[in-house]
Each structure stands twice: as C-alpha cells, then as structure tokens.
Image 1: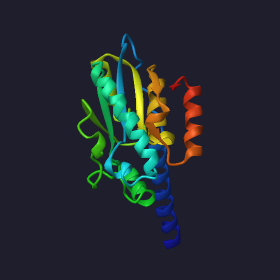
Image 2 (image 1 turned 60 degrees about the vertical axis):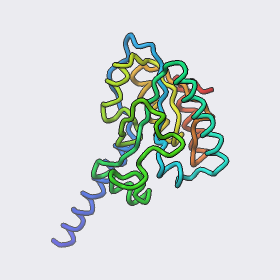
Image 3 (image 1 turned 90 degrees about the horizontal axis):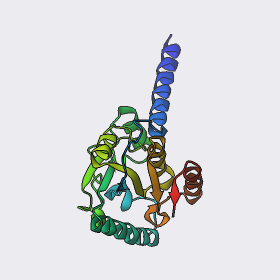
Amino acid sequence: MTVFLSALVIGGLTLWLLHGIRLIKRVSTGPLVRGQSETALVMIDLQTVFWQDGPYNADQKAKAEIAILHAVERAKANGIPVIALRQEWSIPSTRVIARLTMKGAAVAGSDGTEIAGPFAGKADHTLVKRVQDGFETGALDPLLKKLGVGHLHVMGLDTAYCVAKTALAARARGYQVTIDRRTILAGDQTAGEKALKQLEENGVTLI
C-alpha cells in the first residue's frame, strides 16, 4: 500500500509539472484584430535578472541595447506607444519549474524582475506576463484594442522562447508582426534560428 501511495503521489506530481510545462510553452488564441491599424513597439523580458544574468555575452548585449534604444527613440518621435512585457512566474506549477530549471529567475516576488537599467522608464505601458506567451493573461488584447494597434514591432528576450511565443500568439490573432533581428537575443543560437524560421513561416516579417 505504501509503495502504491508513493507511486500515486509521484505520478500526480509528474502530471502537475508536465501541465506546467505545457502552460509555459502554449501559444494562446484570442480575439481577432478588426479595424486596428496603428503600430506599437513591444519590449519583452528586458529585465534585470535576464539582462544582467542571462546567457548573453557583453558584445551581443551592447549591440542589441543600441538597436533597441534607437527603435524606442524612433517610436517616441513618431507617437508610437511602447509596451513592456515583464516576466513573473506566478502560477504554482510554473514557479516550481522556474526554481528547478532557472534557479528561480523571475519568480514573482523575487529580485530582478524590474525592467533593466538601460530600458527603465522607456515604456508607456508595462504589463506582467506569466508564461512565454505575452498574451496569455488577457491583459494585452484590450490594451492593443484601446490603442487601435494592429501592427506589432517585437523585440527583447529570448528569441526562441518568449519572443517567439508572443509573436506567434499575435499572428494567431491577426496582428502584423515585425522583428528586427538586431533587437532580439538568443541564448541558444541554433534554437533562435529555428524559432525565426518558424516565425517567418507563420507570416512574421524579419528585417
């Protein structure tokens, strides 16, 4: 009986964690874009914990920082809203996964979840995301509708994960999506290139 109960508990925990992994990787669907023609710039996960401690070398970050800040400057000059999406793992299963696989980086309430210094104060709107897909909470859809946005310029971290999943979720809703390669970073270059190929196949414009 003890062995059976132990197996049952372990099986339940395994299924719970697998569900958390699915939540993290899932691409959401939502309301289709209708009559929205404005543009917004979306900065993803440019947070202290990722920017300072992530798997990106100094040269990569220096080049990306210049490109991102130039894009923000152009957006501001043209009246284009800048939206920052900030990661906080807050779903119980994803919090555990983050602690097990990411040393607890960006768990809600932990240090470093704030926007990193070079990009602090640049966003007109800041939203918290819970998984890789920035649309998952349901907060981004109404904001973009209110702003009349139908075209997103996506930038930030990480190409293969949160950038890719957010861009795919945007395309699923009918948004035009543009990504400037200079404004994104991938910790794993092979995974990053694979993600970019998938994005291009799904109608994302790469420049």
